[in-house]
Structures are given as structure tokens and as C-alpha cells.
Image (cartoon, rainbow, N blue to C red; front, side):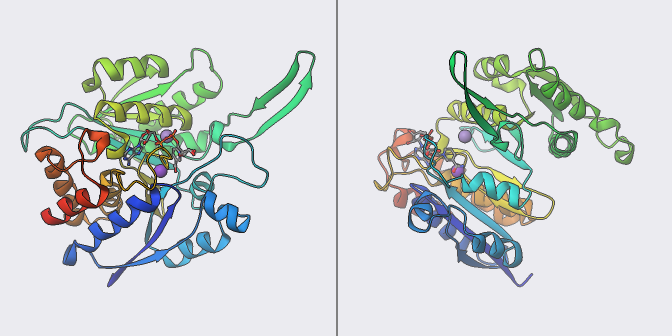
Length: 348
Ligand code: NAD
Ligand code: K
Ligand code: MN
């Protein structure tokens, strides 16, 4: 590749503050990556209020045909039902078949080279579960009744399982925990659990994952355990909703949602995205933590094989956190988004 075409979809709220910061960090990498070219693409609640669509078809088309990868910020989805509105991030994951949401949660060790206290990856299925958004309501004998469909398929469970085993296999501990609630939801979560468990014995894998140890844990006690002994977890694989909740919970262990990156990955495309939302409580104040987005850029580059560039971004972020003098208020600091970005750029 002579250039790397990156779609930028800042969307709403602090997405518009942190994605430009990630862009500058990528630009500072110089020859460690092909020359980056950025394409700004609209999506989100604000786009919806202006145009009546939250995810313009053109955004999807340009991502598909022109871009090597993308970075998404955060969207402000209303909690009430708005006719015609549907979350563009949920739609994008489906449109581009980005079936895995990979969310590493790692604390920064005090000394370089020391083992971090928390070092795990949440692998969240990204296309089904309750996020198929098939909701209905009727009026029954006892007043209004609302129902939602929860879809679990063998295909989606198998491919997310396979992705999770790949990630576990590549880590020193090679340990995978399957998260479910099949004591209650024996049919849906039962299918997820059994399908993931069956991945290592797929004939085409030829024993590739034989070294990976497998554990499982019910989702509620998994959260409990996460807070008491996070070191037991290495890679965790979960259906969509549990994965969403577990990764936000894990973020609390390392200090802030403003630190946690992710990639939405499929077989043909990868989109980096900070785990946090649009943070309406701090939007426009210039104090959003840009580190989750810079780390998301690093994850995206790593996924594409640009290991040196990714390592440099991660090392710069870790150094800023370790030093502890230039941090945003979510980490008890007093610095602005811009000051934290500059501290990162200085180390690149
Ligand atoms: P949130 O992640 O936006 O915020 C939770 C808390 O964390 C807030 O106090 C916020 O200030 C803080 N926070 C989050 N990111 C931060 C950062 N980078 N720096 C400093 N502090 C940060 O979650 P929420 O409040 O539940 O949701 C707000 C909106 O975001 C909602 O409209 C929701 O639909 C949307 N949302 C979008 C996504 C997405 O784009 N994928 C994900 C989650 C929530
Ligand atoms: K986000
Ligand atoms: Mn979330």
C-alpha cells in the first residue's frame, strides 16, 4: 500500500473532540505506516436531525468501496423511541458485517515491563442477541406488554468463538472464559455456550487451539468476580449484551471509560471505536479523554498488521498515564483534551 485511506466518523458529542485527536496521533507516525488519507463521513443523531437519516447510504458506500479502515467516535441515541431513527453504529456493524467487538482492558503498570494488574480482552458478539432490535408492544389483560426477540445463531456463535480462540491462542496464558446465563436461558445461551465450546474440535482447525484452556462463568457472577479477582480472566467471550455490560464494568477497574479502546472487526474490514458513548455531561467542555480513541487507532493499525505504528501509539499513551501529570478530569487530572493530545504527540 502506498497510502492508507481511513474513514473518520466522529458522529456526536465528545466523538467530535476525540476522533480529531486520534487523527493527529496517526498523522504523527510518519513512515511507520503508509501515508494516511482521511475521509470525513457523517452519521449520528445530529445527522438525523438535519437530514432525517442517521446513517447516510453514502457513508456506507464510501467505507465499503474507498476505505481501508475506519474510526468511529460515539453517537447520542435518544432513550425514547424516535420514529425513523435507528442507531448508526449498530447498523454499521451489521452493514459491514463487523461481527466481533474486541475490547482489551489493561491497566498500566507502574514500571515499564512490570505485569499489569488487569490484563484481559472482552470479545463481544456484535451482530445479534437483543441488538437485532425486534421489539413489539401490545395491550394485554394487565395493561401494556412489551417483547423483544433475542437471536443467537450457530453461525455467529461459531465465528465469534473462533475469533476468541485465535486471540487467546496468541496470548501467554491462552485462557478463554465463556460468559453466558444458560442456567436460565438454556436454549439461547445454551446454543452460544455449546457452539463456542465446540470450536476447538472443528475438523478444519486441526487441533490448532488444543493449548487453550476453557472456563465458563454465568454473567452475573462473572461481573462479581471481575471486581474481586480480575487477574483470573484472560480472554472473555460473550453474547452482545453481556459483552457490552462486562466491558463497561471492566473499564471501572482501570480508572475510566475514557481509556478503553475497541475494534469492530469482520473478515474484510476493521473499524476502531472507543468503548465510551457521547458523554453529554462533558461534551463541548474540551475535557474528554482522547486516550481511548488513540488506543482504538492503535488497535485498528495492529489489526491491519502495522505493529510498529500501533506499538508506538500504545507506548506513548502508557507513558502519559504512567507519568500522571497530564490527565483529564476523569482520571482526577486537570488537563484538557488538547493538552493530553500534545503530551502524547511529544512522545511520538
Ligand atoms: P457514556 O460512555 O457516554 O458516559 C458515561 C460516563 O463516562 C459519563 O460520566 C462520561 O462523562 C464518562 N466518559 C465517557 N467517555 C469519557 C471520556 N472519553 N473522557 C472522560 N469521561 C468520559 O455513556 P452514557 O452516559 O450511558 O451514554 C451517553 C450517550 O452515549 C447515550 O446517548 C448513549 O446512547 C450513547 N452511547 C453511544 C455508544 C456508541 O457510540 N457506541 C456507546 C455507549 C453509549
Ligand atoms: K463509542
Ligand atoms: Mn457500552
